[in-house]
Image (cartoon, rainbow, N blue to C red; front, top):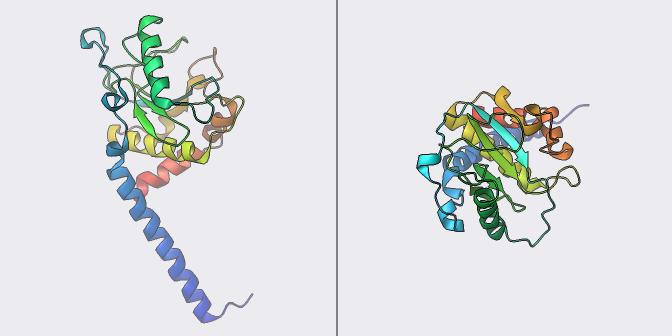
Length: 206
């Protein structure tokens, strides 16, 4: 197919602008990402007891799902407050087991202080793992676009900050035979390397 010369030039300029624009946008979003996180203090959480906390150094990033339905209109703040109470009163953990929680609108909330190791109901040791929970049961529903975008941004930010290799981004089920978490409909994005590829692109363009 013969493409007119001016069309070729327009096409090349368009592609170049897209590349520059995407890189610039990603830099801005990564640089300001921590400011967009809704802190535990802002959603009404209370600090963990430092004397009971296990300190750790982040070497892995591990994805979880809530494992229960999270219908439209459910208040994520109320959910987090209840999760914190349940974690402490019923499980006798120091705090919410996850370091970050992503709601249906792609908002990212701080859970447990990331300096402290998380908790799990399964047999793996989460020490060294930055734990991210995405609300919903992804055995039954699909993660929406806003959740996926927020998940990739959160992972990119963590991988950059803690120098975590992309190969160390995995799902809960990769460490435990007792769970399907983070659910087949979210896990497929790990299995087909979509998350890893997107994070690599973001890290290269930051």
